[in-house]
Structures are given as structure tokens and as C-alpha cells.
Length: 348
Image (cartoon, rainbow, N blue to C red; front, side):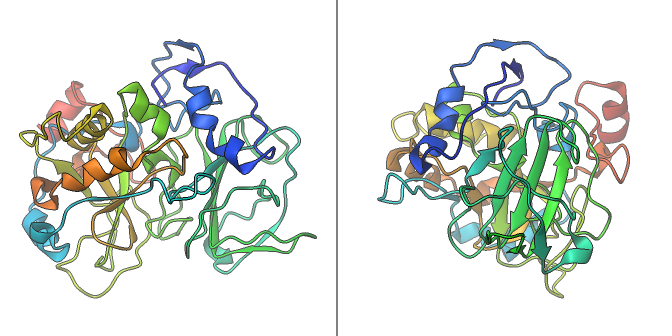
């Protein structure tokens, strides 16, 4: 993913599982051209992951430290915990750890999904089929990007579901689901969940192999914490926490200290790219889970060395930032951009 437009490549995702997981590496060789208005472009599509001025794509290097930073770090055991990449090799090359995502082709069938949390889910239909790659483990997220317009969705639509099980004859089930127009900054309705506890999209916050291989990853990353409070802050829309105000709220954003470094001898170019991203764009608290676990795509190209090197990053080297000054509208993910007069006035 890079900030450019990419020639559309329709990839047949259902030929084999291995082919689906090689998509990112193949797409990274496509030609590029400058498109300033677009955000990070998904490999294999013409779709950007929200506009460039979306909060996910906005640098936070100049934001002030949140007054609750020390309290939240303590609640997440930052002094004794290192970051953990929640993706990588599994020992089975055909089934790496991480969250897979699918490109919808013109031949993909759309289906109705029965949701447990139907009142807070986008009704669909969804491009879920028997060949859709679904995250392994208890969360069973399904992420699907449709680059073309259809009768029910815009071009470049992201479909995400949680606790997903495909069943034929329109009986597929999921815990919750959300549909996102990737050309828009619109957020979920206030108080609504998504496929994520914070009511946020999942795909924009994943470490993606071909981004890291390119040496540039220009967006925030998604991570989890064991303890979250019963509240949320923009751009999150939903909470799933406990009555403990010491814990961070959903949507809280954290930045790696600019002074933190790892030697090249123990942190390769892949590792350095992720470190730079954490300093520039930071982490967004998106779900309950193990402390300081951050997520990436399921890709068979990850190596143990590339992911293990990131376990050297101590959580104590992070601070929570106050990104409330970036907000343009409470119902929009649009963010004031560093260098603008509005940013200097609101965040300076």
C-alpha cells in the first residue's frame, strides 16, 4: 500500500488459499502514479483506504501528550510489557497467522448474513462465499474489498464481519458487520459497533506485507488491551469495556517516542519501517485482547525474523496523545492536517 493510484488488477481469490495469500507481493509490482487526494492504496485494486486526510492516515508527531497517558500506560502494564506482532508464520506455510483480506471479483456472489447484533450491523448483503478467507481463532473476522460499483454498494467498498460462519442457502451468520465506503470519511453511527469493538474498520490498521517491503507504511496501526473503560473517544464509536476509569478508552491513540531506536543489527529494514510508522502514525486502541498486541495481514511471506524483531519494542516507550484537536466533525474521520493553519490553531 502506498499513496498512489494503482492499475486495477482483478485477482481471482478462490483459485487456492496459497494464491490468495500471495496477493500482496504480486500487487506490489504494479505501476504507480501520483494521486494526492487518495490515501493508502490497497494492492491489487484502485481503492484507497479512505481519503488522505482521514484520521488513520494523519501523522501525529506534533500532537500533545494526553493528560491520562501515564495512567493508561500503567493499566496496560507498559513498564513490564513489550509489543507483540499478532501475525506471522504459523509453521504451516498455507495458513499464516494474521487477518486475511479478500478482493471481490465481478463473479463473487453476495449473500444475506444473519447478525447476532443486528440493530448495530449494516444489513448488507455481503460478498461472503465458501471460498472467502476468514481469520482463524475466536474472532473469525472476514474482510472483503469490492473495487467495483454494484447495485447495492459504491465502488471501493469495504465489508467486514466478526465471528463469521458461511452457510449456503442464505443462512450465513456473524456476530456483527459493517460496510465502509473507502472514498468517504464517514464514521459509523454514534454508539454502533462494527466488526471491531471500537466501531472502527479493521483493514486500515493492519501491518501489510507489501507496505513494509516497500519501506513505507503511512497509516496508524490497530492494537488491543486487556483493560478498556466503558467509554470511547473519536474516532471510535463504541465501547466494550469495564467500569474502571484507569483503563484507556476505545479509540485512544499512542505514539512511540521519537528518541527510541533499535540497532540495524537487530532490526532489519522491515523492522525499521514498522518502528517509523509507530513514531509517525502510532497505534489506535481498537479491541479487547492481550496488552500491546498489534495486528497484521495473514501473508505467507512473513518470516519469523521479521516479526520477532518487533518484540524488542518496550511498551514503556509509548505515550498517549490527545488527537481531539484533529477532529473536524464528530461524525467524520476527516482530520486536520499538520502544516495547515487550522492544525496550528487547534493543535499548536
